[in-house]
Image (cartoon, rainbow, N blue to C red):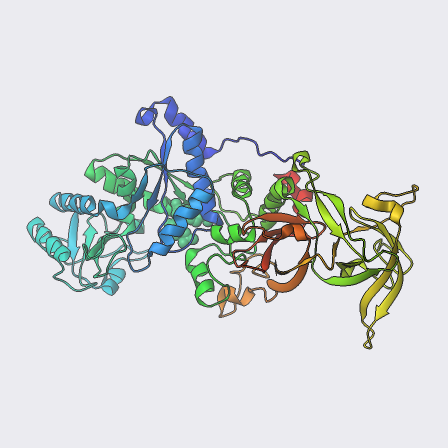
Length: 559
Ligand code: ATP
Ligand code: MG
């Protein structure tokens, strides 16, 4: 199994290498990550973040963090804060280059005036609906607006009055004057400004006209002297428009490169749809550990390293594809295997009384903290007469390949002793409520005293010392690989997994007392767990990050 990602090249880095050879932009490399603050970041954004900041780091360049905040009705400060936190948590630093598109509103307005003066933009009084009708289709050319040939003076006057708030929302737009019969619909006189009397999180009441994304985005990159504007494939058809704007204005012209967005099985990846999950109460918020958001993954127990490693492994390509969720899960297992201390916890307790153990003699046994990390050392785990083991680790009638505890059978308690089951105690309903076992004092530490072998090793906790805690066990949020593949009216919501969260009471070893939210552990034999921020005085809450079994390791060769 390959464990280390290899530094790879890709079509984007190839383009950059070519640009460096010709000394384009004087050899500068400047990228940016430009989120719209209308939701929390998801794992797809992580791909873009790792790509943009990664390229800047690799080429000794710069990468800006820029909020594309041109749509005040959908944008909020909460989103700005979360995005800043998430990018930083992933391990990237934009230094003093945190920008807001709204800081450029004045400059954008002046650029628009420049286009009007050049006869390249006009104020249109058609309604939104009429504009749609006039636009034509892929097979039919559009029709020119009757307002298209207004004089420059009239356009300047109207645009200025749009700005000063004279006209109601939606009554006019400023449009670029390009070509209503262009085969590329984006070039059919696209809107540059709309009237919207709305307060903006950053500029307040200063503006009642707001730039459209397609007008603003290229200008933002140009103003920041970005050299390579890396974006996802859906913007390929918009590139001729961005080129047109920049060429008309005669300003710095970044090179736009499109790559395929990340899609993941069992996942939806759009802020709009994730917001729907939050608003409809299917999850408990943007940072619910079932969400594919960065904040959800963090709360679930993912590490920044595992996400960066995942992004490196998937690479970048020019055609759309869907990555198997199992690869992301493999990356977190691989990382936690190296770094997560091992502890013992029991999810479904079965009481075991060790009948020949002296109840006054509780003792402490040595347990290895992490077999993958010799420096991690060991800790003491208390042992006593009554312990809990996992219900699944006992079978009254064991099937053939079941090597754990059964009547008359001997197993090893991890780090403790060999025990043998002597009695099965049941309640009136016939359910097993307790086992009686004997232990072999000579097997202390779990070592065989005389070379005799036991086939099973199971985990346990001492009943009197264990801490009761809450465990939240997650499964995939959707039952289908492609959640959006559905004829159901409810859309992807029809494919939500009703069993994606199971909450149970568990018992953990006392070394976990006082553990901090965010700490990650391997519960031996059960999986990786992370302490949830809901943990409060006296009550530990664990999120299961991922189980131990890794189906990806087998198919990883492909990557
Ligand atoms: P969504 O469709 O989820 O709402 P978006 O593209 O509208 O995402 P932006 O805030 O505009 O969200 O995205 C910021 C950057 O992240 C953009 O450059 C965008 O191309 C990139 N990005 C968004 N989704 C993905 C994805 N799934 N894979 C890779 N990059 C993405
Ligand atoms: Mg967007």
